[in-house]
Image (tube, rainbow, N blue to C red; front, side):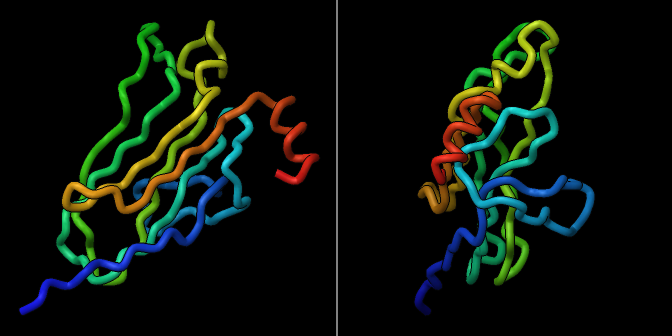
Length: 145
């Protein structure tokens, strides 16, 4: 019997409504963008739809730009794994801008955040978001980006 090839499609990316990890509902997209303003509580990431891969192991990783935690140490990339739950499954990979170190403020959130999904050792979806300070974000937004 031939092995089924999974079908993976990124359905949305950008800024989302607040995501409740305990809920079955995924967050709702509020703005399609790769540029995110560094404001505490902003939720951003992407949603992929995975078909024909029930039971496959999905590895995810979020590479932060150098966020400082409460102890003054740089956070390691956030990673984990999850099994695909059905043959037509939506998965959200995202993060929230947080104030973790009071002296640093939101400055350590600035930079590129790379989010990667892998299945069977291959990257199946990837998105890089640029988190910028308020002034720079407004500059680019006024120019249509």
